[in-house]
Length: 203
Image (cartoon, rainbow, N blue to C red):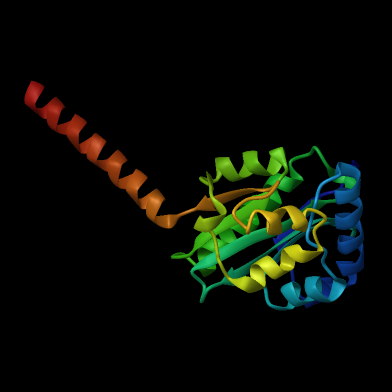
């Protein structure tokens, strides 16, 4: 990686010029890892950019660095964070985490009540998800929208998913639930209040 300044921002229609490179690198990366991934077209990437549903990383010189997008399901009750990819020369420099954090915060800002999920077989993405408050769940706990699962048909592991009646696959489903976070905050506040009360009684 060179020393170029990298900007991580919400993608716009002006970023359509990067779509072919994003799709090519996504497919190449999956082949190298030997992992399954739903195939994406340049048109679908551009669609996400035009809709404000994508985050892109580029250098000050305009070189593409990384990408991710989100999609809403079941009347915005579920949001998927997907397609995280970083160009090889910029990997292992914290770019993926920056993109992941940005797409997550964008999803939270636009859909604060939605449950956000990710399905992945990558250990690095699982770790980033965990740091953001995602927890492993069963496939039954994420969206059941047929359109989402249709997107898995182009994955090399789709036969496994079908044989399991979409109950599990090689990917791990991870879910961020706003309600769960609220419970954690409430529990922490109750604990703090209890400690304060105990301190007052001991004075």
